[in-house]
Length: 262
Image (cartoon, rainbow, N blue to C red; front, side, top):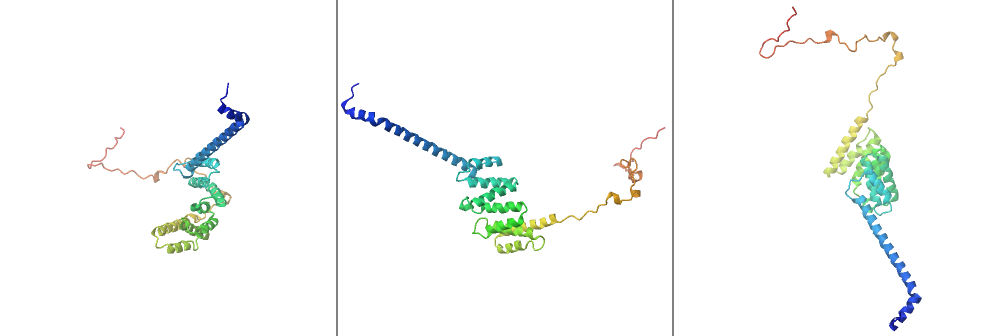
């Protein structure tokens, strides 16, 4: 086939350089496609993770555990872990919740707005596990830090744990002092009063029962051990059975008596 003169330079270039540039174009196209697919996957994973972190769905413990494993490298991973810990608290698995909250405290990866959320979770879990001394320390870290949404709750928790650590003596003195500090806040005062009632109620529950005197079998003389009479458990003395009162029915007429046998 005769090549037009105006295309001869292009044909010569194709023979010398064309295939190399075509290969380079194909590689660049494949790279661009790979980048596009990778970015699409990242956006999809971020969207899925956001559902577990901030979505309104009622996820079960297993769902959140799987989400932590699958989306552990996402930016919202700390929020998923916070939600998982809260779910553990909801099902009263305080040991697992404490483990997750403690890891978040050490990682320091939560957003600044939730800076004290893991520490507050640690304090609540320790209190729920009756480790009041350690719980008080965690509450104090929050109460003495910068002002946050957890400040009052931390002060109340610290005073509550102090009450349990101190025992009966001076147990509500910090709660009473906190009540004076917030005397102008009706809601805070109400919560403190409810806490005082709960602390006093716990005092009644934890009071030991009086000892029960027990007598060992060998301490009872053999002569005093009398076996029960046969059938005693199933019979009742006749004299202990109250007599049935005969009452006249309405109208004043006596009740009909059974006829005597002739």
